Image 1 (cartoon, rainbow, N blue to C red):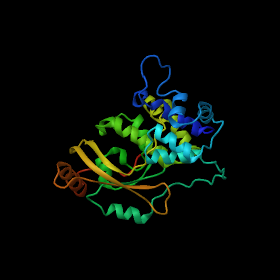
Image 2 (tube, rainbow, N blue to C red):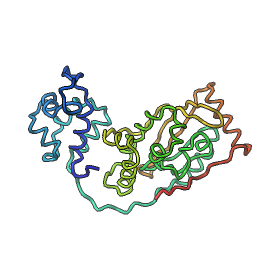
Image 3 (cartoon, helix red, strand yellow):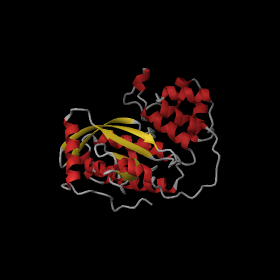
Image 4 (tube, one colour):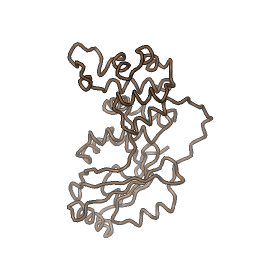
Length: 286
């Protein structure tokens, strides 16, 4: 996971994604590397090629803010990506790792979610484990059942490609969200999860190597549901105060839409007992 040279790994990954054509450079068959060459990045960022090579190789790990800003511009990083680059450039202060406690959702939040019969809602942990979900969330999406790790299911369970019509988009978003939410790349649980998925999924390995980072904020997803067909739902995310790393995600449909009617039908089937409740999944969260 490039734990000894995270800055260099990030720079190399982003350099390989830049299109030379965007800077008026030839991108033809003469190139032996993907993206830009090191000396081209250095030229565009206004620094010496030797200095940029030292950054990628980890011989200099703490560039100035001006250098960071120049590299962010060359790599066309968004605000979140630039913030991640700045964080990588800071000196690392090693602290004794405190034992991680099992993630638990507060009783008050659980009660609040249960009181939303028309709003699918779930809580994700720092490794994108589903820690809790109300019945409607579990009915909408089999990836939102407590006990599921959404990253593992996205890449290793064939059902995910059926659930998400836009699987490729959501797979990339999930990997970027994992980087954003997990934070500490030395976390043993993260190392285990990334190692497992890198061995078992070519798609995950390719996406993880991009070093994209993007937290869950808001958006729209399409779901295929076996009971009511396709739903198009918007979602909002909220950080849970007092529980670092936990996110509350709430979905809603456009008023008057077919998706709103489909949600209402699922809710009525839950209320009448026609739809069995999926309360948990057998996989472990440890």
